Image 1 (cartoon, rainbow, N blue to C red):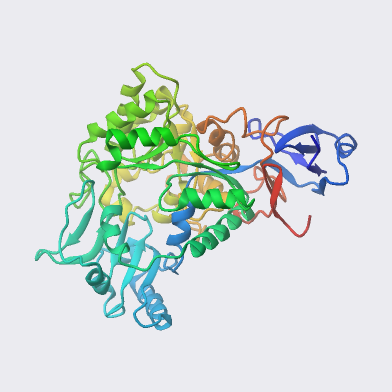
Image 2: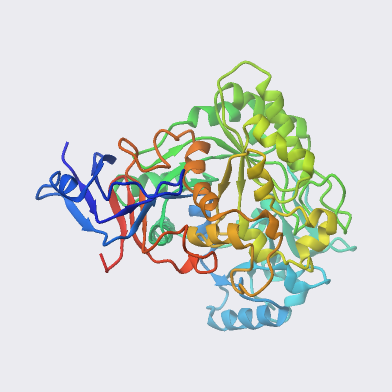
Length: 542
């Protein structure tokens, strides 16, 4: 088989030891690393058809993998007004007013990234944005993507004029008179209004997704664990893959939610989907939700938050969730459970423990987010072999060291001090995988690794860190996006290290991410990204 790619003058970084390999060049054949060696030895493997790149001393790591992202839904959600930079209501109103002036008459306004902290102690409701949105159908996604604000006109067009009942934890928030305030909690409630808004065409969806994936490749990502298969996701991945335009290797986990999605036929269908895919994507695992979010009062906590909220599971009957976990486990299907509150995490762990008592194949289950948990929960991750999938930039950017933010105030000092316990979980022996949860937080992996190290707001690194004792080292942060991500996917013999026979997925930096300081890491240039032996991003300097 011919050599398709040769990389010369490289510093090859092993993410297990943190040391450079003695070899300085590598060759790729058939999408795999075919040889590691010296310059002359590897150069001799090239022919006229081989792409030969002199890296000039740049640092090569195994390809970085985001452990939790939403490419298709994120590409749609982030098409609109970005409110993530607004820190107060005045800023939000100004941004919305500018967008309204640009809208065509009758057009819908879409915005995302709204921080509930801008409302201070006041309720999160659309009245706070009047008269800016007077007569304008508007949907404002809050940053957690589990809630949104709908303008009165949007509610009117959707026919939402009072409370609704759902098969899962969701709510059309209403005032004492039963009138909607505009706040919609969780997907089932948000969907009532989203369905009334115009939808993008298939071509628009493909173009948006393509642009996002190319940006991810340029940021150094070679893969991602996609935590949904909603809408046209799978068809779009298949289309891009067949055309050779898929620049990331994607592992996709479709959702299972309460109601018809969890009945026997639906679970069998999810099991039957496993392994379907193409060259660079495949369905692997199932995503479930055990709760919502702390910021909007839909997490599941062992004690209520300061508003008396976050007391219920996403599943009306949590034992149905336990049953589904058992069925998937027996079928050999790994699960990834969104569990943010302490009660949600505990129930997810209990369900995995129960599933493991039955006969069946070894399965690597995951819990996503794990924002606050008590001491007695931490050790159970390693005991049960459950992956801890975490997003440290959520702690950095959405909470504050002095606990004056909405998340911390809702929880109170005791639980807010247990924020994102990356260090404790790592030291307890858990496999910690890092990700962004994009579009909730930015996807550049260097920013994710930096946040795991410094735990400071990305926009202002002069601010104090939130829980500095929970920081990871530079090597651990790199492992969280390489070797640990590979292990979580059951691909430790295929990916995560630079070795002959492993996938030819590489990320190339101007310098070592281990010797670059945490505050400077997000600006470290990504010079080359390679997926399946094919460059998906190449800096002009190479």
